[in-house]
Length: 369
Image 1 (tube, rainbow, N blue to C red):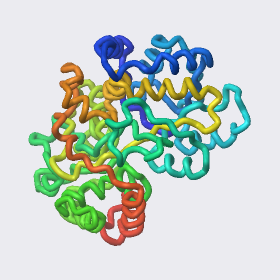
Image 2 (image 1 turned 90 degrees about the horizontal axis):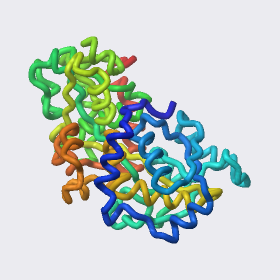
Image 3 (image 1 turned 135 degrees about the vertical axis):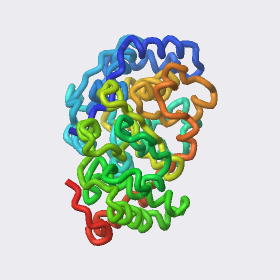
């Protein structure tokens, strides 16, 4: 599977968001685009599980709003599968050809380089940070998560608030990663985040500092070399797990207070992981694809992702404009914690991956499994 499903948003809850956004300046696409998309009559998506980032209710809301059928291909596909689906259907205008894809950050530039995407700039383009979109509109960052601490509050009396806290004796045999840092991107980025905090924001020193940080965490007996999951948090095997905030928040819902889960975004070293949205160069329904993009980047669509605990790319803007419903904000960590989120470039991610995967065994020496 491409993704571990973090959260299922009720259609009723999402309907409330849609109603609240109905009068928003960012909620409506042009009449001409709507008419052209309706004439095509269908949108084909791929790799959108209904319980991922609120996509289920969002797809239903899109269908209801525009009266366009949504053909859903392989919801459990990976990013690579999505790109391959475009390649395999270049001359196919049938139901197996995806119009749009939602892929990990690194797949956007490579798909563009391979001539598999077509450019499109949504009407809210200017509000999307430049470092989270292709300058020519071939791919656009859509949502992100930040690395956070998922804490079993029944076992941990005082939750850590920053990376440095995890080194304290209070957290002996308590801290785990949500993957093996020798192979899993989430864990690799956690090493980078810890290093960024230790290096006081100096990205050039983050990789080395992160490895040193985990070496000390392991030497102090605080690091648990087990891949952390909701079950291990509940069982107390890994009372603290470093993972994407949307997965941690989803675990909080899934565990339903048994145990009580606290999700903490660290004060420093706040590192974000981004997905991107793009339209196939061979889309059978290009106008429906553009309308879908307009919907996703409208206030309504952005809040739909947020209801699924995935921070939309326009989150800071919506928050500043007080457009995020109070009930939704109450379920999320404080908005201020996301303002300083760092979005590593592709080059930085590649460098970190090389450094961590090659040096983890020699520097840290913990066999995570």
